[in-house]
Length: 305
Ligand code: RIB
Image 1 (cartoon, rainbow, N blue to C red):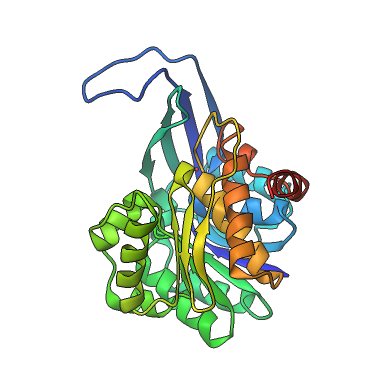
Image 2: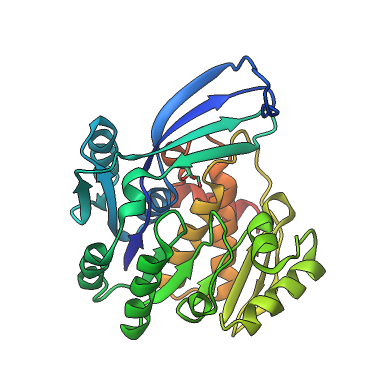
């Protein structure tokens, strides 16, 4: 099973603080880590750890962060041969705070990620032959992602789109993706409803369907996941874990979903894989280091049937 990720790659500078700082407030934190992140990169590494063959299409700068990140990601069995080195922009950087309740806030300096263009789409097109799924997010230019999505659909590759960080989307974006997976805040930006329960999520999903996307999966963190797809609809309860850091939980979710869909599992089972992967990601610090392995995911699913 081959999964292609077209997306962002960052270096994350994550500070652990008792609470998220208010505007103008200075807080004393307890520690920090510098680890690879970026929504695309996290989804790529998680997919590989969950058992997929993964090719990543993206851009880093010609700088020390770019070199470090690529070395670490390549060691995770992700094929980074299609990551271009951009000589004009620096590697993407995320400045993250995580509080004692595992909540986070993130500021991203996109750098080379925002330079993805038709050349990157052309490289992705070659990779898509024989792939089972394409994973997309919104930390690279929408136009390039949507061009890649349209090519993937023509080749019969399932397009799984994480609209994060969310922006209002043009109608055509909904028509070139097979799955859309917003969380609560992203759902509110897309449709004007912040889902807090299954009923709200169902209402939001029907609006997203009316825009042309067949499969809607709404991630509600600790409240669970609502799914409304061509084959099945329903609700998956959250897995119980001890959360310490929610960074990249949504990315792990999409990787779990993509791997399960690629393996031919039902939508309900694939959503459970996503939910388990997302939950496991919250039990460890950082983005890339917290991405779950297949053995951990299978164990959690077996323990909490
Ligand atoms: O989803 C988490 C990711 O968002 C972090 O790794 C950070 O780089 C930002 O892109």
